[in-house]
Length: 111
Figure (tube, rainbow, N blue to C red):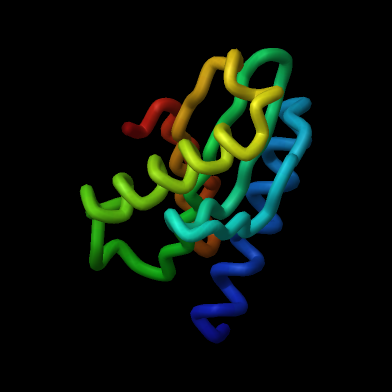
């Protein structure tokens, strides 16, 4: 399977997983000049910025670099400024890793 298609399928799988956990998906592939966030979800007074990683092998266990974390945080800050109704929410950054023929795993508060 092509890498881009597998990545998109992984994002849709993450949407299903978070929806099953009763999160409302606010955005998928939200972009602003700060960066891109794969998913933004909300449950109660919690807002979660989710990075989805699709891996076909174990070659790279460094899922999110420091630089990428910074870009995601910047994009999240911009999102919160543009959407002031979420500014009082608790913010969390999750990482979900999806590999073929394996159960996905979620790292809450990944950074």
